Length: 333
Image (cartoon, rainbow, N blue to C red; front, side):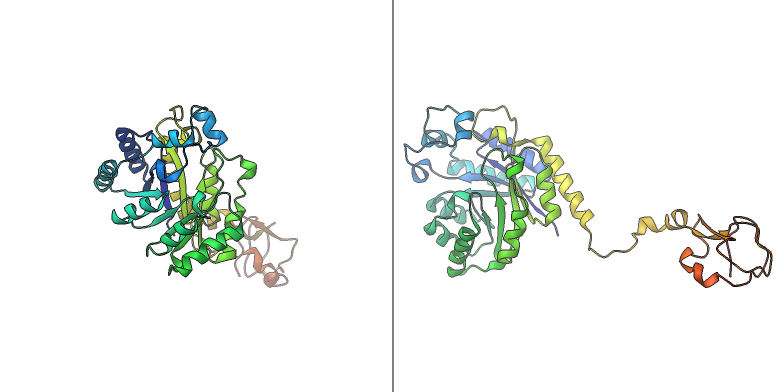
């Protein structure tokens, strides 16, 4: 099964359309399936006095409010139009997360093929109801959530007519970056088993190895923040991978998909030619005269594996040799 790889540009464009286009191009060049931005209006999202997260205080001016910070990161309607057209040109799907009801309606009018619910909205009942009515596949991030909160969100979706088969739930930790000891990747499997849904991983760790491990565990969606330069100013750059790492991530995931196989244990086509070389046959451990009885004393096991399998040793013991055998000669019945 092919993993849906979402290259999360997020707000790493710093409010600049040119940088947003560069991020889009980098995602396309890396081979990601979707490039995702964030759609919101600061006035509808946050109060003017709301504090910032600790990691945001480190990566942006500590004294400014969250409202001031995110207002600079808004994408205008015109910017959305340019980015969507560029995605068509580059052959990558445009995607965005809406953080308020009006923005959700706006994205639906733009024709988004799917809906992404960010972790912070998992307890936003009006928002969840509107998502459930969209009639689109839904990707739900679950950072900061308990199983009970995930269950409550799913129940809202289903009451509004969404089928559980249209839902993918992403395990997530909303610290930026996430300490490795707090990733708890097995929680993704707990979500799958608890709710019978497709699962994935929204990765805020440093590096790419955890996302790759998630695919090996069964993630069907991977979301990863990326940036043009981790040293750029802004809240999310330092916790993002750069374009070359994104390309390695995509390549690694595609390799893992191939490596997972169908689960049937059998020799592969490429290794069959090695079987005669690596396996062994029954051979004469010493010269054996015609008529002499085969025994553990005069039979040995050596490569190549082109003769009688050593698994048939007991069949031969006590039988008479049909002709003379030199030492190391393959035994024939």
